[in-house]
Amino acid sequence: MDREVIDEIRKKVDIVELISRYVSLKPSGDSYKGVCPFHEDNDPSLTVDPTKKLWHCFGCGAGGDVFNFLMDIENLSFPDAVHELAAETGVKIPDSQRSSGGPDLAEIMNEARTYYHENLLREGVGRLAREYLENRGYGEKVIKEFGLGYSLPNWTSLTNKFKKDYPIDRLQKVGLVNQSDSGRYYDRFRNRLMIPIKSVRGKVIAFGGRILDEGEDGPKYLNSPNTPLFKKGDSFFGLAEARREMSRADRAILVEGYTDVIAPHSRGIKNVIASMGTALTEVQADVLSRFVSEVVIAYDRDQAGERASLKGLRLLRNAGLAVKIAEIPEESDPADLIEQGGAEAFREAVDDAVPFHEFYVDVLVDRYDLSTVSGRERALSESTGFISNIESPPLRHELIDRLKDLLKVSESEITNRVRYPHKEGNRSGLRVERSQEDLTLDEWVIYFLIEGVIDYEELEEEGVLDGIDQQLRNLVDKIKEGQDEGLDLEDVVNRMGEKERKKLSQISLIDVEFEKRSAEKAAGDLMKRFKRKRISRLKKQLRKCLSDDEDEERIQELQKKIAEAQKELQKFR
Image (cartoon, rainbow, N blue to C red; front, side):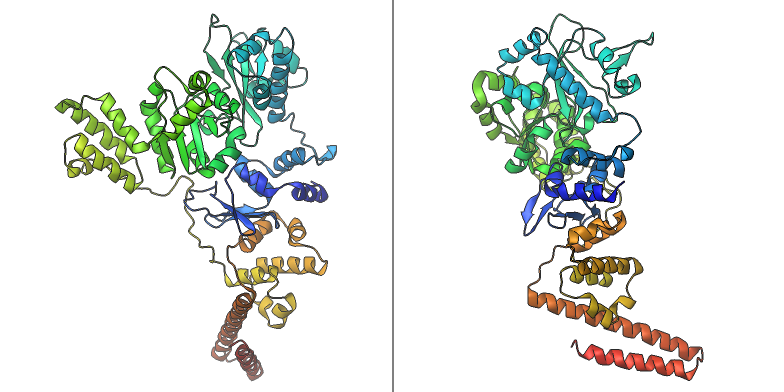
């Protein structure tokens, strides 16, 4: 891959905008901070520097540039990350450097979105779908914002059109076509309103299709199957459209279905996303925790009391999110509420949402006859199992306090049944504890060199460079070369390999502020430590010489060096 092409892409990508697609970033001085998406992060430990175009997590150690982030978050190879960002920035990649592995799956899905969208807009062809949208109050603006489309009723419309340009096995791989028992291929979606499902980056990864002829066989909503691009339990509908408003409001409104997202968006309520009818997963809870601190659940009234929903609410709480539940009228859903009562009715339901623990108590009251001993016994059995999976001690205590009066039992009779969670580790494996000031002595040299507090000549003159780690010495030399050529840090970084960029991001993005005088003092302290380190090393060599009965000349040479180093150390006192 041409280095000049890579450098041009890196310069054009706004690293803050890219990472903001996955994480809510807040300004912090000249940099930005957010919750790291690569480990269980309770406090924002991810730092992004727009000037240096680097990011680093001081919790798990991940870091690097825009390519590293995209590779890690999307599980892409380096060439794939380069091609993705080249397409976004308009940088041309020579044909000789393009992938020869066949058409990109995301490219096929984008072409399918265009195909379905054009069907919807064609006179006479998409009439049925357009009438459905018009009847629900969704006009051209909504159609364009969500890229809505229409799949033709013919069994092979898309198959015949797309197989001219794409291998049939790849069309099947992304869930656009199915294969019959006889081996024939046919369209998965037929005569349906097509709703693109996008990744957080806005790439089409799947489709949901709503039936338009209620007399036809088949489910009301048909979704893409799990594919290399799409896993239902990892995704949300509407996240690409909602993520900015979610971060601004610090709140996500979680609904169940596609129109429950489209309806509020069309009325100006933009922080709404859908779990697409499935119980929430741990992955989805982690995704939400990157963007907001509060989630309001606005499921259908009968849906909210189901066990799967309660499990999802618990997952959100365990991910550190505040959770509230909006009361939607019975036999209604958010889309109905908005279409019948307007946006204000939905906003009022969201604003009046009750906290998680109050909702759970209400569920028990509705589900069991608590006036009877047997009803209270069943409620006690269910609630203690539920509480056992809640990680927050204050929330557990709040629920226990409410339940003891409701079920007419003592607090100990509840707590004795609760199995308190014990975490062996965390979802992302071994947790790396590292404070932001936990740089090695050698790493501090590079930090002060980058910041201009110490210059290369001083390090060389004082003998500091003779004793530092070789990998870090290579970094020092590359920084020096760049400084000699008048390059800024971004250009220096562009010359480095992936491991070097990650190491430099970890060092340069450390969250520490020095005034000029205190920075100079800290640098002086650093030089003193190096002098002591050098003296210690020389004394060790001297002891070895004495024990090995080496020649007197070598012993005197070492003694002289120790004396000189000790004298030099006095300058820093």
